[in-house]
Length: 188
Picture 1 (cartoon, rainbow, N blue to C red):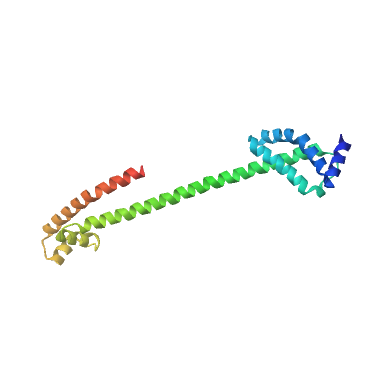
Picture 2 (tube, one colour; picture 1 turned 180 degrees about the vertical axis):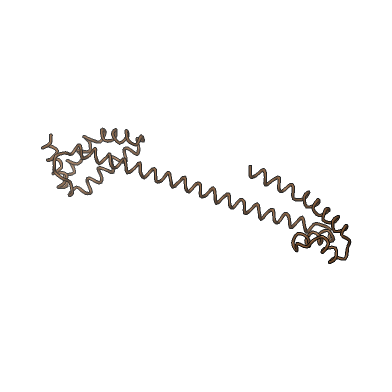
């Protein structure tokens, strides 16, 4: 048997296609079954065995004529199967990382969009306030003036400032609450 393997290897090494086909046909099924036990996927196991034979043919000049063809074929299929599994794991890890990255990017994008929409909604609500009410609110919230400072600046009473702020907050709460409910629902 060993001398027959040595002879076949010698023929393959010299480019004899018929010897190569004989080895392929003789060992393909058992090598395919062996690859399948490692990777558990019929089509991929077939591809692995075919890759091994393609590599043998393309690098036939480098074959060693030591007579251990069968063990060489099984070792080659074993190594190719392990490389396949390693590649699948890398691919799987990349897909998980990529999916997480996309999910985070989409989450950040959604947050930015909602923040922008909330800001537009608030500005629209502020602009819809009656003028006196809007002025008091803007001086309080944007210019960070105290109620007494607003009263002095607008030449109105402190009680009027308090009433106008209460009115502004009530109107804004009513106009923005629907949008906030929508955001809350989308975040769930």
